[in-house]
Amino acid sequence: MCSDCEEITDQPILIHRIAHESGIGWGLYACLTCAPKHMSAIGARCLWLLHAPYCWECNNEAECEISVVLRKAYEPEIQVKDEAA
Image 1: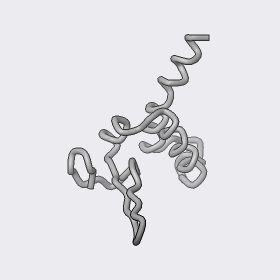
Image 2 (image 1 turned 45 degrees about the vertical axis):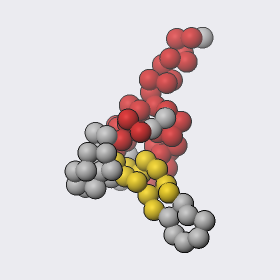
Image 3 (image 1 turned 30 degrees about the horizontal axis):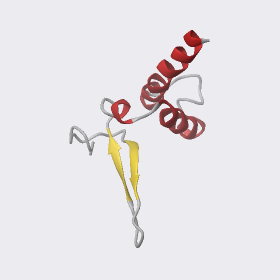
Image 4 (image 1 turned 120 degrees about the vertical axis):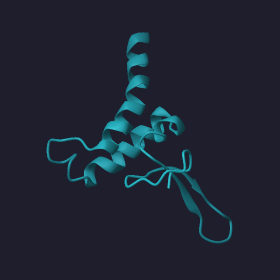
Protein backbone atom coordinates (compact mmCIF):
# COMPACT_ATOMS: atom_id res chain seq x y z
CA MET A 1 0.00 0.00 0.00
CA CYS A 2 1.24 3.50 -0.83
CA SER A 3 2.16 5.40 2.33
CA ASP A 4 1.12 8.67 0.68
CA CYS A 5 -2.20 8.12 -1.12
CA GLU A 6 -2.99 4.84 0.70
CA GLU A 7 -3.93 3.06 -2.55
CA ILE A 8 -2.93 -0.54 -3.18
CA THR A 9 -0.17 -0.80 -5.79
CA ASP A 10 1.30 -3.78 -7.57
CA GLN A 11 4.59 -1.91 -8.17
CA PRO A 12 5.66 -0.42 -4.83
CA ILE A 13 8.81 1.67 -4.62
CA LEU A 14 10.71 1.81 -1.34
CA ILE A 15 10.97 5.46 -0.25
CA HIS A 16 12.16 5.18 3.36
CA ARG A 17 13.57 2.55 5.70
CA ILE A 18 12.69 2.71 9.37
CA ALA A 19 15.24 1.04 11.62
CA HIS A 20 14.92 0.27 15.30
CA GLU A 21 17.78 -0.08 17.73
CA SER A 22 16.32 -3.34 18.97
CA GLY A 23 14.36 -5.48 16.58
CA ILE A 24 13.50 -5.52 12.93
CA GLY A 25 12.72 -2.32 11.06
CA TRP A 26 10.39 -1.88 8.10
CA GLY A 27 10.06 0.12 4.93
CA LEU A 28 7.64 2.75 3.69
CA TYR A 29 6.52 2.27 0.10
CA ALA A 30 4.90 4.55 -2.45
CA CYS A 31 3.10 3.97 -5.73
CA LEU A 32 4.55 5.07 -9.06
CA THR A 33 2.61 8.34 -8.93
CA CYS A 34 3.60 9.38 -5.40
CA ALA A 35 7.18 8.06 -5.26
CA PRO A 36 8.93 10.97 -7.06
CA LYS A 37 7.63 13.45 -4.46
CA HIS A 38 9.63 11.64 -1.77
CA MET A 39 12.93 11.16 -3.59
CA SER A 40 16.02 13.24 -4.02
CA ALA A 41 17.77 13.02 -7.37
CA ILE A 42 20.60 11.04 -5.77
CA GLY A 43 18.16 8.65 -4.09
CA ALA A 44 16.27 8.07 -7.34
CA ARG A 45 19.52 7.43 -9.20
CA CYS A 46 20.66 4.91 -6.55
CA LEU A 47 17.31 3.09 -6.67
CA TRP A 48 17.47 2.99 -10.46
CA LEU A 49 20.99 1.55 -10.37
CA LEU A 50 19.81 -1.15 -7.96
CA HIS A 51 16.66 -1.87 -9.98
CA ALA A 52 17.87 -1.97 -13.59
CA PRO A 53 20.30 -4.93 -13.44
CA TYR A 54 17.61 -7.27 -12.06
CA CYS A 55 14.63 -6.15 -14.16
CA TRP A 56 13.79 -8.32 -17.16
CA GLU A 57 12.26 -5.43 -19.14
CA CYS A 58 15.15 -3.07 -18.47
CA ASN A 59 17.64 -5.71 -19.64
CA ASN A 60 15.81 -6.54 -22.85
CA GLU A 61 15.94 -3.19 -24.65
CA ALA A 62 12.78 -1.88 -23.01
CA GLU A 63 12.09 0.21 -19.95
CA CYS A 64 9.63 -0.75 -17.24
CA GLU A 65 7.31 1.72 -15.48
CA ILE A 66 9.46 1.77 -12.33
CA SER A 67 12.55 2.63 -14.36
CA VAL A 68 10.73 5.49 -16.12
CA VAL A 69 9.58 6.99 -12.79
CA LEU A 70 13.04 6.74 -11.23
CA ARG A 71 14.76 8.17 -14.31
CA LYS A 72 12.36 11.13 -14.46
CA ALA A 73 13.07 11.83 -10.78
CA TYR A 74 16.83 12.20 -11.29
CA GLU A 75 17.06 13.59 -14.86
CA PRO A 76 16.00 17.18 -13.99
CA GLU A 77 18.92 17.39 -11.54
CA ILE A 78 21.34 16.37 -14.28
CA GLN A 79 19.91 18.94 -16.72
CA VAL A 80 20.20 21.77 -14.18
CA LYS A 81 23.88 20.95 -13.57
CA ASP A 82 24.57 20.86 -17.34
CA GLU A 83 22.94 24.28 -17.85
CA ALA A 84 24.96 25.80 -15.01
CA ALA A 85 28.27 24.72 -16.62
